[in-house]
Image 1 (cartoon, rainbow, N blue to C red):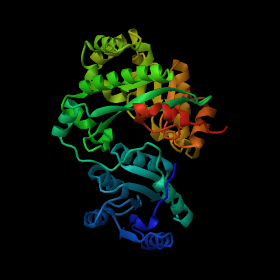
Image 2: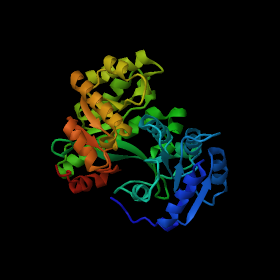
Image 3: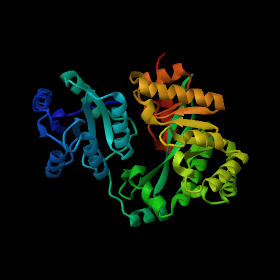
Length: 403
């Protein structure tokens, strides 16, 4: 759902080594009403400009092929040091390279609005600003937050880490049948912080297992409440920390936890990222096998973003494959993304796995997945993650896109 964007208030930085193209970009931005514009001819100069700006730019337009510090290295600096709110690539390079750079930036938590093929035009810039103004109901503030280890310890001790839930709908009929539990930090001042700002601290300090326990317990309680108060019977997915898989007694522990809260393991899916088993594969495989034996569903999360996907699929009794959002959003206009989705769906069918596509943001994404035979969709089109008390209302407001 879009919101009015005041173009005149935007702060935009143009990074382009070609003088004429840079001047044309500045002229078009002025025509569109952008009043606060900065420019630089290469990455190194642009970093200096960023440090001198009064506030973070809303948008950085970056050419990739520049002498000295190229656009890829420059975007890496922006992402790692949180120097901008969003970036867009302006390039004539091939789509495979553009996809790689966008994925790199998103992995650092940077908002990437896409790529614009040269030459730049007013119409292309207008479309970019439409994307910049796009906000989704229930979406949280994405501005990076500095978090200390002490703050995270306090958050754990005082139950400030809470589960929000994002719906998953069947692609055939649009019915919401499941949700994924996603952690949020609700600070004492009421501000909600996204996990990208603090998960790494929890894992590094050895709190991953406790976080998994917290999320699983909250998910079970909300599942029971939705059933009792609203008649909603939903499967719930919960992300499992790598640290939890290192404990030999994890399967017994989680089985007892959910049964004590009145939930059957078969109603839960435990999501495992591709990198979770690297440190101790033998122990992790044993834990996952026992979890499956006890009835839990197992999903491989962010499929295709790691380097061991096929090996993991052949060794672990997964029941579900989740296609990463980087491959889903905008796939209808990107042959490479579509090819990844088609290959993933074909592999899943042969292995008898359910498939959930993440990052579904438009009716076009939905229609493509339905045409290709994907089972389930998750993303802002269906609904953003919301607190448990808001989920029934969010589901009732969801309407499947017209075929």
